[in-house]
Amino acid sequence: MTKIIMSGCNGRMGQAIVRLAQNSKKHSIVAGYDANPEKKNDFPVYSDFAQIKEAADVMIDFSHISATSSLLTYCKSQKLPLVLATTGISGALEQEVFAATQAIPIFKSSNTSLGISLLLSLVRKAARVLGETSDIEIIEKHHNQKVDAPSGTALVIADAIKSCLDYEPEYIYDRTKEQKKREHKEIGIHAVRGGNIIGDHEVLFIGSNETISIGHFAQSRELFAEGALKAAEFMKNKTTPGLYNMDDLVASII
Image (cartoon, rainbow, N blue to C red; front, side, top):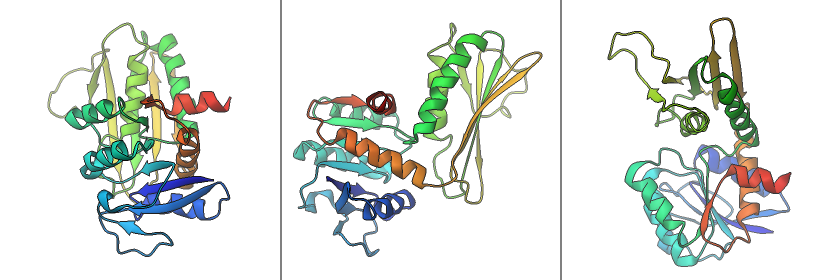
């Protein structure tokens, strides 16, 4: 049984993970953290990490970047492995996360879908073959409550493509600021927000005579919840500090 502290337990993803864990014989949510702890759960919920008394094997975080520093402090104090899936982490906060990997094991992924891991593998292969001859565009779509844009997953996809190119690409988020022709070195990244779209990502390799489209379209938040619980199982017995990701999880499965 993997004992889990669920950070962001009252959010959409937090509740999806709670529901799966409740119906699982392999996972148990022993405590939760949320900035709005009023929602009823069958485990204690705290609005301050320092108040958590329950022992756990791992923490899963789907909260907000405003809580990241506090949860890192808590996990370091408890030597608790962390599955960090909150999006929008960048700049100084990202450096704080990397510094924490010197003290505790951290699994960091902005998307816990195994399918997205497969997509990343495919776009790397496509970039090696088509990167010199194609214009590359990324389109991501999410629900109208998502705050950060572009999505963390879109940036991960762009970075995966970048790692396979012989040139240094420029990420372009807005073409209205300059009226000019598209340059080959650009990777366009576009964010669409509306309705209750869970998460769609499409990568286009657009050549002179053909377009290759590689996409992933989430149909349920349980997809990400399942991946997060698999990540928690993977991190449960990790004692060596360091940074882990979905590639490590997939490698452990296959």
